[in-house]
Image (tube, rainbow, N blue to C red; front, side, top):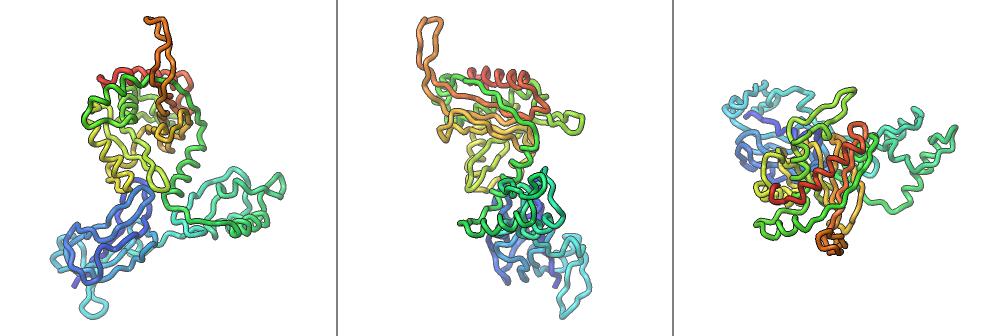
Length: 396
């Protein structure tokens, strides 16, 4: 009987590998096409590898808690020749007994393991440091799966403060004596993303905005929009009016966004996920609320669908949920902007009509941006426009 390989699929944009979390079936089980077979974890979410066809599970070559690259063979399904033909696969001559193997590219079908870093981190950051590293030191760091970013706290004793191999070995020996806990793939991925973001000149502007109208509007909605959704919708409208601030600098050209897809930062276990609202400028606040709430819940479960990850042009983060009134969040590497929202608080406001101070609920909005693309004036005008829109929530 033909044996059809179970291949690690492309699970999302920029995802190169995934970690085996759970086998949902066992060898000998009968399965149908598109049935979930293996639960895997990427740096963005938990997903499933599905069956390419109907048949019986022959075996799993993959191992639990191991990482495998996209295209790696995870096991085989014993199927009929009709199923193999339906998939457009050729049957290679049997090598032993009456077992047939499906002919696949040896390189694509071969098992490829992700090299673990020191202490078992599945996804090394691969940061490129600015200081000089000798070939010998680089080789030793590669052996342990470390990058230049990991040496930021090491004081070098070499010429011009360079880190020598001896400095490095002392550092490793010291680390080994400390309490150590494993870093998750998400934590390493977040660290790598922030390192890449920090290679750009970043700046932040801020603006206090009254939230009384937003809170009054939200009270009468069912379901209720999250506070960050008001900011997300206002940002989307402002960028629809002028998308240039969300452009990316590539070489000497500004690449303008093709659509206004805005992400929202959600705290998940040991990291942050960013589900994406597609075409946020074309749907009203009311139309977006249910989808927004669904994506927040899925992000917290680390079960975001592939169409809700990646490809966003900006992010909104509500750091006010932690009681913070001001922060300088960092935009993702592929983005130019991140809009932050602080905690609302009662403050006195001078009312010209009443000629007295009145209490209002105020929140600080911050806009962090790539200074290569935007200057303070353009960023300030964009933030002012967002503030104006949030004062008119009925128009969102």
